[in-house]
Each structure stands twice: as structure tokens, then as C-alpha cells.
Image 1 (cartoon, rainbow, N blue to C red):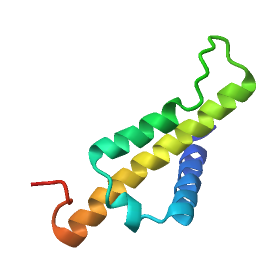
Image 2 (image 1 turned 180 degrees about the vertical axis):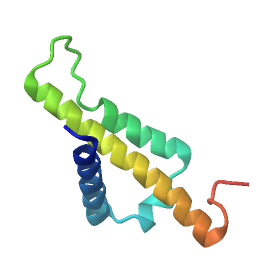
Image 3 (image 1 turned 180 degrees about the horizontal axis):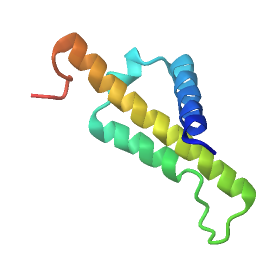
Length: 93
């Protein structure tokens, strides 16, 4: 699969996240630790302790990685939005 298709899947996931949860209310309140926690949760949610993976498990892992990438995009968007509006993030001193 070409990188353009993967990036489009990430964009679609990010659009879904914004549609479902918005971005101002929650994203702007997340600290770097919050973002890493969410990324960790979504990044490991698929794991079930097996060492031989089925196609379904690999498909689920792929979807989780798309979600993780979209969360990373959300974190960067939050930083950029806060700095544009306030000159810094709420957690910067």
C-alpha cells in the first residue's frame, strides 16, 4: 500500500475523531503525558498475549496503528492551536 493511502486512512481517522469528540474541549486540556497515555492505550489495546497472529489480529493491529497516528496528529494540532492562540500551551512555563 502506498504511503498516500496510509496517510489518507490517518486523515479519515482524525476526521472521525474530531466529528465524534471535537478538538477544542478535550484536546486543549491534554498534557504531553495525557497524549502518551492515550497513544499507549490505543497502541496496545489489540494485544491478547498470543505469539501467533491471525489475519484478523493483524488487521486490528493495523487499525490501531492508524488510530495512534491520528492521535499523534491531534497532539501536534493541539500544540500548534494553543501556541497560535496564546503564544504557548497551557502547560508551558
